[in-house]
Length: 411
Ligand SMILES: *Cc1c(COP(=O)(O)O)cnc(C)c1O
Image 1: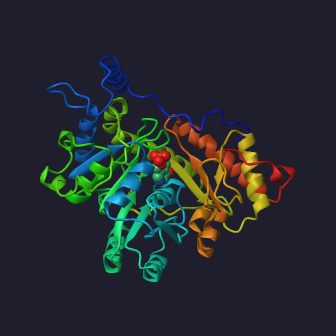
Image 2: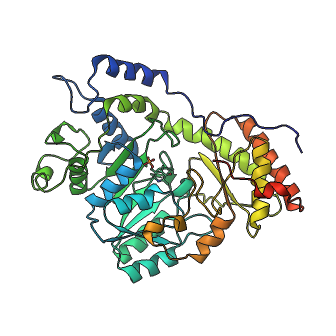
Image 3: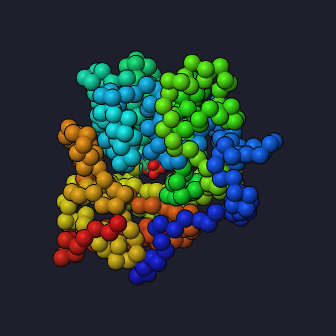
């Protein structure tokens, strides 16, 4: 038991490293922010960033773009998704994922998730057979990675091209393979709440030269694709350049300058995030009625957020727990709320996709609690946060559901 309240901010990230600030100042001083605006002999920060991200992930090709959502849409177009095509995706994901599918004229069809918050392979198989879908946009939502070898085997049996949404797995690995390197394409986000922060930004990585060339052209390279250093040779652009639309979504040199030093910190960030995650996990072990998510040993995850389940808790109890934690400074998000709140929405809120009901996912999401863990938290902060959740869960679990149960949910 603790009486202390938590006073930290769940949305405060670390500052940009000094090296990034200095590099950004240099870009501002010379004024060449556009990636193709270089002087003779100069290599743009954006081109260097791509080269460094390709080397970090082991991908042959990397393209930096304006957002994670744009990266996914570009990847889908580059693998051939067009008007009316079905694209499968996890029912547990974030709004930009079905949004990327819709933006290319595709039809999102959702696949059930398990209690471990990963894709249900049985349902993937039946949805793939029922729809004839050719593409799976696999979202490693909140950093939970499914058995990637099994997924790739099943996808090849089903004839599915896999595009990975790695917004929450930049820097993570499955059995030592960097996330984003199993599927045909990996997509990442550099938005402020992800693992490197440029405000906005995205990466597309692939080993396929035609997919890479299409992605570069789509991103708005005009006819300057030869300035890219992590792109295929000119022969791969020849047959495509007049047939691929320019859908501008480039990265710029200012954001690239801020990002480059952060790539070097990814390993260290993964370790620090893991420390925070494990502190919360230890603190919540054994709380009656609260189920922790099992993390497979193959998954070297980045613990930038924490999830747990309250299976079979009724809505009033869950609202009461959230309100009590909030009153003590601990911001919990809930995927079971009937209406979307800020970043938290659910597959059945995406009405434009005409989602079919998914009873298994509904059951999981009804009791799913989510919490950000910014790196500005210390392990002692995480001990306090988990102690508060533990105390309040025990109180609410003992039947203290009050008027607060109907209080509005926080952002
Ligand atoms: C943030 C996020 C993205 C990409 O989002 P952008 O805001 O467009 O960079 C994609 N998938 C998931 C699961 C995300 O959380």
